[in-house]
Every structure is written in structure tokens, then in C-alpha cells.
Image 1 (tube, rainbow, N blue to C red):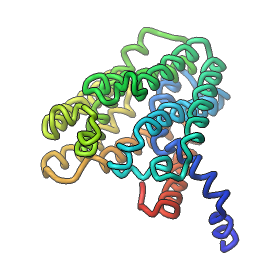
Image 2 (spheres, one colour; image 1 turned 90 degrees about the vertical axis):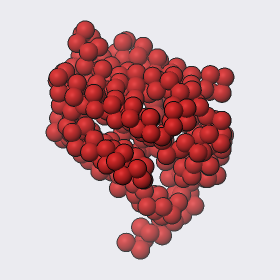
Image 3 (tube, rainbow, N blue to C red; image 1 turned 135 degrees about the vertical axis):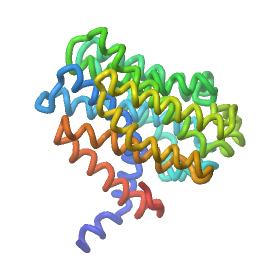
Image 4 (tube, one colour; image 1 turned 45 degrees about the vertical axis):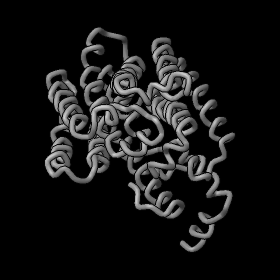
Length: 307
């Protein structure tokens, strides 16, 4: 054990881990969830090689989207105390650009390796990530465009990518993706509420900044609730069960008028990923590894208890 601890304290290991966690592994989980649920719904199975390829695709898609987000929002992340490797100076800006660009290329290659439509949807997702964060467009700082891109991109489009990898396209996929659009839009709004002061100070006009905390909470709860209910109506039980157990935590914050939705968001993400394990059992190992390694990294390297 002492040898392991000494090895883990080596500068080269710290540097490698800093660059790995630039990908924000915990935020890859909300990408993997609709990706794998769409894959399963279309007929994809754990034994297929496409399953590990989808995991890698989700990682690299997140590397591009979250990478650009961090690069163009360093100051905002510092004000909001995001405890991320880039704003903390643990990852050089040049390395951040290299990781992000390489991730985009690998995501595109993997996308087309999984199928023509998967590749087309992947390119659309990469483009949406660019428009979302680039200063010329910066849709993430615009109230309703940010909500729409998170719902349609992070929720529905990722689900479609998984579906296209798992089986033939069908009209039903356009219906079954809707609960994810609603739920992900609601969770995004809830995520932005704790950052109102920091976002306002840096000139961001998120929906939470524009409407204020109270109205934003009401909209977020409505979208999450409708998304959850439509999940059971449209044969997406994982999303319904997530809403069933997570929505009370959102409502509790709203009623008490204190605290924020960080814990509720974490519970929702964890639950949605847990349900995937009932379909794809080996995913439990991936989920556990991400959570445990993230806990160790943030505790030892950054000094915060997260998650």
C-alpha cells in the first residue's frame, strides 16, 4: 500500500491524472446514459463490439464539448469555483486545445466506424458543441438557445446516436428521444441556478440569470416532471424511475428555499446510470471506476470532497 501511495504522488502521475480529469469523467456519465439507453432500445447488446466503442465515443465527444467549454470559460469557472484542472492551472492551455481537438477527431472516426448515420449524428453533435461554447456564437450564454441545445443535443441527439449504433433507424426513435430532451433541459436549468451570481458577473445571460432563481426552478421542475412522466408513456422506464426517485430532492430544495440543486442533479445522474446496469451489467464496473477514481482524485489532488 505504501508503494502505491508513493507511486501515486509522483509528479508524472499527477500530470497524467490532471489531463485525464480534464475530460471531466463524472460529466461523461450524462452522455453515456442516453447513448447506451438509445443503443439498447434499438437492439444493441453488451456482447457487441459496438458497446465499448460507444463508451469511447462518449468519452471523446465529452472531451470536445467540455474541453471547449472550459477553454472559453476559464474566468467564469474560477469565479464559480468549479475546481477544474484547467482554471486551477493544472493543465496548460495548449494541452487543453490538443486534447479537445484530438477528441473531436477521434469522436468523428468512431462515429463513422459505428455506421453512416451514427457518423452524421456525431458530426452534428460536434458542431453543436462548437456553437455552444465558441465566443463568436456562445449559445451557452444565451437563455433559451442554451436550454434548447442542452435538451436537443445533450439529451435527444446523444440518444439518437446510440440508437443508430444499435439498430436500424425508425420513426419511433424520434418519439422516444423526447423525454430525454425535456429532462435534460430541466436538469441544465437546475444546474445553472447555483451559478447565477458568477454568471451575471461575467456577462452570461443564462435562463437562470434572465428569469431569476424562483421562475427558473419552476420551469426546471416542470420539464423534469413532464420528461419523467412521458418516459413511462414512451417505453423509457429508466428515465421514468430516475424522475420518480430524484424529483423529490428537487422539490425539497424548492420548498425549503435554501441550498442548491447540485446534490439533486448528482442523484439524478447516478440513478439514470444505475438503471443502465440492469440492461448492460458490465457497465456497473465502468460506473464504479469513474466514481471511485473521481473521489480519489478530487480528494487527494484538489482537496475537495467530490463527488
